[in-house]
Length: 329
Image (cartoon, rainbow, N blue to C red; front, side, top):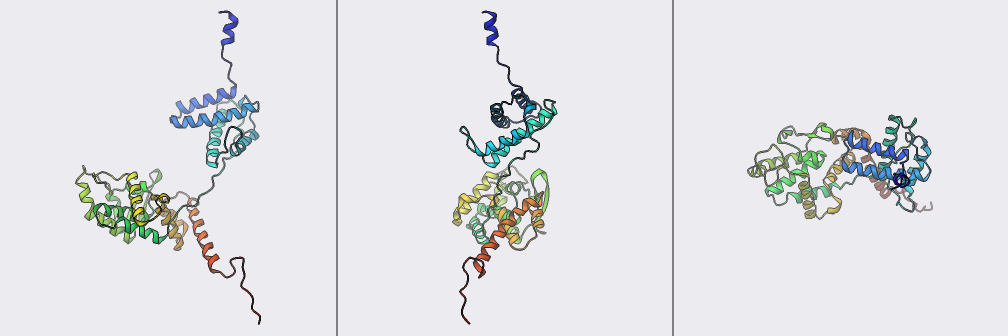
């Protein structure tokens, strides 16, 4: 083999921008311990970013300008011949990857500025939480405990608690018996980040939980090895989130409610919406839900405003376009 042939077989050096991306991915894997799926997602997103930069002749990290990052975001949202337009959530994820990359490049001294600093990920459209009416909640709860079997008592108690204190499903199935004080009507919930909050429990939920504890849980407990969990399955173990979903679906089917549009979170949304409809202060609802920011809770006020508009449109004589006919004096 001639020397010329050996030279021709040498790999083409990668552009500096590509090498920087590979270094960043290695950093995420080794030093940050990123999960495999996270790395695959970052590799895919940054691969598309590299292709965009290369099409513009950008091969050095320091040559990328803020307008290039902004234009990349526009390209994500509008799509091209090879890519469908991305939804706001997907585009935001890609921009987060790009911003993380450029922060790394700046920190490592591979560029003197961060061109992505002023580019903000697109905000996804805020979806109004789905809630069901009070009558539908009552139908659901009645259906859950209809035949008064041990399982029915448990299911009724679970759904009453979810609606009665606005608990997340993970908080409900994570409850131990000692977290309840039925005499004072309070329950200790452990939310996101291990944050605890003491929430009042209404009389209907207290009665349902008491009936379950007296007439159903002891039978379930004999099948297990002893656990402090409040809600047990038929084998005596702690009820899982998946089983709790099944409880809700079964009750919804019995009640004739649309199963596809219901989830355990629906009862949490209904709890918040009905409180606000009843005149509760948004900051009180924030505390009950365990939201870190009142901004998160305020989305529920949008639901109640929509309801007010509907009632207004139906009730006020001059709310709609048509006006009452004037009569002559």
